[in-house]
Every structure is written in structure tokens, then in C-alpha cells.
Amino acid sequence: MKGQDYYTPAAAMAIALAFKLPALRNNWRDPLLRSVCALLTLAGAVFTFAAPPTIEAVNRWTGIPNFSAPLVYCLITAFSAACLVLIVNWRGGPPEQTRRVSRRWITGYSIVIVALTLLFALGEAPVERLRDFDTYYANTPFMRELIALYLVAHNVAAFVMVAMCWRWSLQVRGWLRIGLMIIVLGYVFNLSYDFTKMTAVGARWTGHDLDWLSTSVAPPVASMGANISAVGFVLPLVFQRLSDSWQNWSTYRRLGTLWQEVRTSGPDSAPCVRMAWWSAAELRMIQRESDIHDGFLHLGPYFDQGHRDDALARALAAGSDEETARAVADAAMVAAAVRARSADPEGRVIGASDEGAPPAADGPRDLVRISHALRNSPVVAEFRRQASLSGV
Image (cartoon, rainbow, N blue to C red; front, side):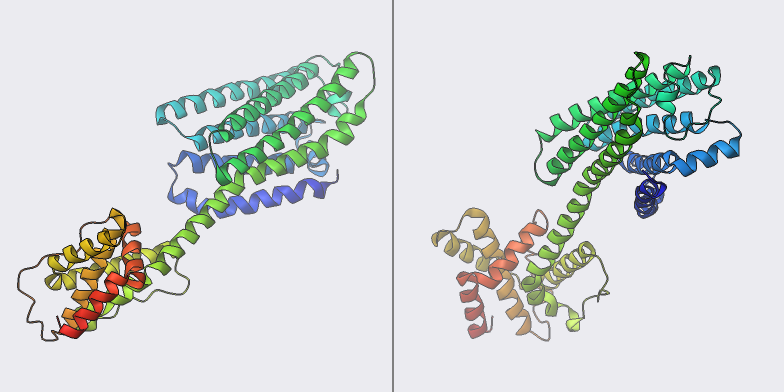
């Protein structure tokens, strides 16, 4: 693999991290967000420092022939811990248990990093090896243990990730399950990387030469595994955000009929707050809900509980379920109140007994049902017609 094969995914990780940093700055205490940023940082660092041009440059800058070897191994070990911690925080659970498990992984892999550093300091590796350090020093005292330790630590992390993500994928559905299955596939590639590296190193221990597995097969396998895993981590988050945005836009649009019905009920037909075209869907939905509730407040003196009870009885008699019938009843009362407000431009009714807004809803869904009933219910259409004819 050439330098660009390492630097391209490193740049992708850096771009993803740049998009996450503002959110991290505003929500530093969010453990999941911290875990994501740590993983992106370490993944980018692994690709950057594992590139042969960087390995050569770091060795030259430090004046130590193979200083890059333990540096890359420590970064890979830290990245393994970051993946495990991210999965632990992503899955959630009792906060204290999540923190305890995360601390255990961080502590365990921190010990491995310290051990890797000590082993390199105790051993001797005078000949610079840019691509075949593992096999060249496979039989060198202390270097042998260093290589074996980092491979075992990486292998353990890969096995645990496959097991955790596989079990979790059996308990969830949708994009999260797809993402977890992709992560499992990515870590199968990581296990293949470990297998090829261990096979090449083991061959050296037994006096054979399978260095090509380490130098030609393992790097592209590792790169493929990292890229696939990154897609698995990102995909559920991206599609969840898109799904939330779509749901917000859908709710905003479906509230349109109710919003149009009550928007003229304010004092002097006060215009609603105008939103910029680039405003987020969630903000637009919240503003529309607020406008609707403001309209309910202004219509309060004109609400007639008798209209609501009559519409509820008609809807139930027509075969509607309880929830739909309540929405139809609220919609009929709103439609009648709007016509009553229009028939009282001087506001003579205001100050009379206030029966209040429709019964409290459990969020946007109930408003959406009311809006749907205003648009489609024949019961509401009949109440609207009667109110217009009678001037009530």
C-alpha cells in the first residue's frame, strides 16, 4: 500500500471529526459523543502514522531507527480500546455500570500501552524496517514479546467487538441492526488481519518465511476492515438523523390544516413568526405547534363543550375508535369556535365563561390527528357547515 492509501481514510476521519467538534464543545459531558470523537481521532492517527512516509519521517525526526513501530502499535491498541468504549456507551444502560465497564477497558489497554513502551525500550532494533518490522524482529528478545502483545491485544478487542455487536444486533431492528452487522463484518476483516500477521510471525518463529502475508496481505485487509467498521458506526447515526428530520418535516406538513384553521384567531389577526428558509425542520415544527397553541388560547372563550360532546357521539356512532373520535370531537369544536370568533369581530364573547382549549394532548401526534380530522372528517365538515349557516 502507498502513502495515499493511508492518508485518504485519515483525511476522511479528520473531516468527520471536524463536523463533530462543535457538538463536542457544547456537550462535553456526553460520554457517547466523547467516545465518537476519540475513535475518529485515534482512527485518523493510526492511518496517518502507519503510512510508510510518516514512519520514515518520525524515525528521522526522533533519531531512533524504529521509533514508529511502538508508536503505531500503541495507537492501534488505544483505537481498540476506543472502539470497545464506544460500543459500551452506544448500547447504554445504567450510567454507573457503563462508566465502570468503560474504565476497565481503558485501564486494561493503558497497561498494554505501557508494556509495549517498556518492551521497546528494553529491546534492540537498530535496523530501520518500514514495512516488515513484525517479521524482521520476530525472534529478537523483547521485540518478540512486543509484537506478540500488540497482536493479542488487538485480537482480543476484535473478538469482543464481534461478540458484543452480534448479540446486540439480535436485539434491535432497523438501521441500528444494519450498522451493527456492518461493524461485525469490518471486525471479521480485523480478525483476518490478526490471523495473517500471526501466521507470518509464527512462521518466523518456526524457521519459515511467510513475510508476504504480513507485508502484502495484512495492510489492505486492515484498511478494508477499518473502512467497513467506520461505515457501520456512522450509518445508523446518519440515517437516524435523516429519519428524525423526515419525521419532523412530515409532522410540520400534516399540522398545516390545523395551523391554517386557527392562525387568524389571534388579536387583530396577528401574523405568525416567520421562519428563515434554512431553519431546521424540528424548529419549524415546534414553532407551528406553538402557533397552534396560541390560537387555542385566543379561541378559548368560543369553545363549546356541547359541540365537542355532540361530535364525539357522532364519531363513535359512525364507527370511529376512541382515539380518533376524540380527535374528531376536538377538531369539530375548533372549527365551530373559529366560525364563532369570525362572527364576533368586536369580541363581545370575550370575558364570558371560558371553557378552555381542547383536552391536553400527549404531543404533536394528537395535534396531527386533530389536523387530519379537520381535513377529512365528514363530522367536522358538517359542524363547519352548521356553524357557518347559523352564525354561531
